[in-house]
Length: 307
Ligand SMILES: Cc1cc2nc3c(=O)[nH]c(=O)nc-3n(C[C@H](O)[C@H](O)[C@H](O)COP(=O)(O)OP(=O)(O)OC[C@H]3O[C@@H](n4cnc5c(N)ncnc54)[C@H](O)[C@@H]3O)c2cc1C
Image (tube, rainbow, N blue to C red; front, side, top):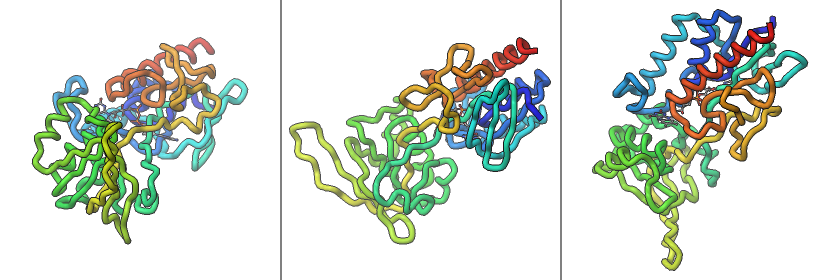
């Protein structure tokens, strides 16, 4: 069977595209590794219009309910290859192969790794990349959050309510996330902020037991010696990389983000992209959702022109 459309990803961009696609009554499919994407990793969300406050988990439940209302067809699979094949597009996943007239790539981003000794060895043994998913495991324990941007502050805000103590390790001279979040973190009694600091090693036996850190002071001041912090959990929040490797034919920028125009078109006719995986400047839930709807409407026009 050749689908009219396949949407890759079920974060805010893919889900919104899917709701619009269902309402257009086209023959489509969503292929995604999960439902919710990064929104499921978010703690408190205070900037999605209509919700003065909602947790990431609750917003994902609402998104899912919306998909279910329209019986959106979903395959929980990982896309390995996306290729133009004559007039159609072929998609290979870890479980099968599909053919479609149009595709929307809405595969978002994944967390960057620290790249220090011990990180890989202790992944899921104390090293984690999702405070919302794994935070409760560290109730009453000492933890470190690595990263002083919005993701690091969001993780710290969640963990300071659960953990005994949070060491916030930040590589730059000051925190870089939103001021409103900085104020909350700075006002907490159980958070120590360590600026100009890098993690050099993750230590442990069966599970994480600590990290080695090094403080880098501005030029002219002598750097401190490497120190060890004893703790049980490490939350790595140092940025995100686009899930775009499977789309080899698509033009990308230096960060690996898929280049699109204002119609969400990529360089390959019939392949559209939306949300955080693209080179649009701002990465937010409401923007990804808006881009998802726009991509669908443009894919629908493309299909209509082909008829
Ligand atoms: C900790 C944190 C807190 C945040 N807080 C906020 C906030 O308060 N407010 C706000 O507006 N934004 C926030 N954001 C940003 C927001 O979550 C993202 O901008 C938004 O989720 C992007 O949506 P997306 O659909 O483009 O991608 P994603 O949410 O990344 O979803 C991508 C989807 O694609 C799937 N996928 C990936 N690769 C493949 C593949 N190969 N095959 C199949 N499926 C695949 C994934 O499983 C996922 O379902 C936060 C982000 C983080 C990390």
